[in-house]
Length: 172
Image (cartoon, rainbow, N blue to C red; front, side):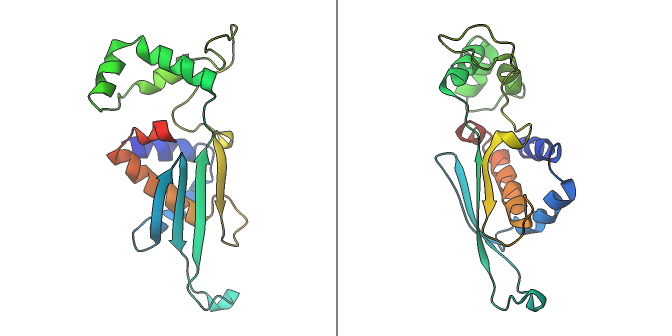
């Protein structure tokens, strides 16, 4: 269900019809290569032959997604909030993602780490809240819109990965 929450979060600030178009591009038949390395999601996505647009050879597009990482001080605040809640720590130590982990992020204020003054900034988030939560989303396809169907397909593949291993959110 973490993957569903990730997609729900994206639908909050993305054109849901463009996101839905990508569903068909998330299969192994379309995504030829998928990797998450150092917080960067990379994929090679198979496109369509379309003689109307002069595309006679099957194209392969490179898509990349990277969420905006939390600053070191902000991570310190999140870790302090998680560490103060034994239930969260116990679940994480059992390699489980607690249902309410987002509350620890939401209650950690920006700049709340060591040396930071009091801040009234909105708390952090584990799931994306807006476009600014993504440092990079790009695709080598000619579609000007973002997300294109290839990036949307990669979002769906990432959502499936989060269903299997929600701790990937920490890496992202």
